[in-house]
Image (spheres, rainbow over the protein chains, first blue to last red):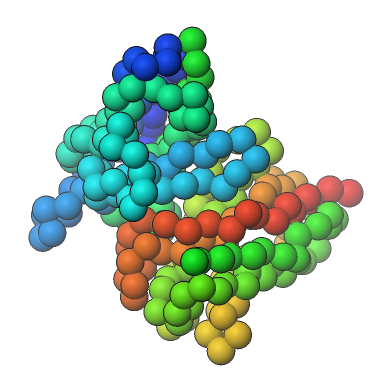
Length: 114
Length: 122
């Protein structure tokens, strides 16, 4: 099974500053025939279900603000929030869907305001 | 818009069974794969199972294989999770979720229900 490891586990960033969350997979999630990375990012606010932010490692889902961006390929990925807003306080998860079962998630990164 | 409403959660003793349901609306249910994802109290997300749009293909995380069964009734726009031989470690919020891309099983999840709570305790 592919293991997803996020870093850091928690992060405190000042409003308006950049936040960066990393995700590493135990094996490549780049599918050669499609040249796509099978990697998604989700945001979960307290008491709410997760929300899809990014898929194919770098494609923003509909309605997601452009301050959110995804990058990386193969085994190493990054979610960047370019200018942190108060409403971005949440836990962020990466997920690989290259190998199902299971569609394993990272352990989560808790983002707070400094 | 897409709406997913889970039901069937509750408190159950170890070793007993429970069936969760998820009523879908706002889209063509029969053309999308569906997932169950759970979240233990204070913990992260754990993918549990997925079923193809036509119900012919089903996949499970190892920890529930042989105990849980995912199924769907496309005539009723409803997804199910039959959970047998429940254990304390199955205690979690269970989310019903829809694949983003029609037909394919492999892909991101773009719609989630609010979840239903399952507590396994004597």
